[in-house]
Length: 319
Ligand SMILES: [Ca+2]
Ligand SMILES: [Ca+2]
Image (cartoon, rainbow, N blue to C red; front, side, top):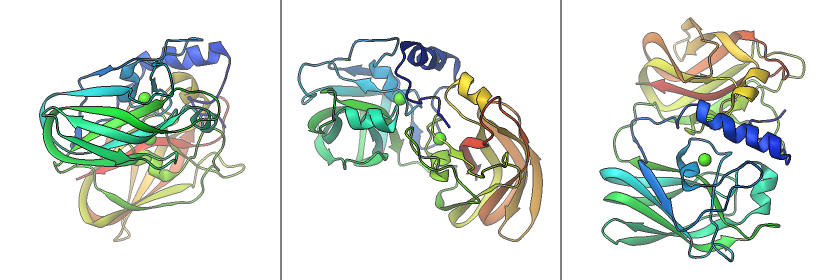
């Protein structure tokens, strides 16, 4: 199983992934997430072999694309500044540190270890980042029109001296209409491979090229289920879903997509819904339900051209 950001060192494969980026959706924003209007950086690594590392890669909604600094040395002192297009109360930023193109690339390049965060009024804070291939949060708690992130320490990669950040999300203190998920359960899951993991939590990260994939050996996804438990009973009425392998048209075509599913709520009631065989984020309305969890059992799939695994890239229940 390969993801759209799978590790292919051939220039052609890299070019293909990057070239398709323009055809795909922008980042999956939601209430609570602040749109980054523009980005500037101290430097960027020059494009090579068809792949590019410019500052906007930090806000394209894909973990598989990265901003990589192009300063001489290890990247200490390099910075990227996010323009929020106006004043927002920023609660926190979420950082995908390092090159998430694949687990191997992540190991090979430098990952920030400490970030100095400077707001528009000059306020500075520092944020320590663990050396883990997981999104990490830096608390802010202030109103600002921009967030500047400077690399003050690095976890050294095994091959490249340059420091990368794959994605940054900026969150405000507003109520998010997407019901918060406190626990995830699945009928099966594809094991982690060189490209990363396929855990259900990937469907609620706002990143289009991370996903859950079922892991049944011979099955095509029919009968498999995913379950989202909320922190408390929530009144939900819509499911926002990105079907299949997100992030690239080519890989989307290769994997299975769902076309019909049954939603089961905590009172035991069930509703069957149709799911569009589309790579865009779709909204499925099912009437208002007060529930503390929803299980989605897939009843029907459309088979992809190569991988007989059903994948879902994003899934949110809206209040
Ligand atoms: Ca990115
Ligand atoms: Ca995702």
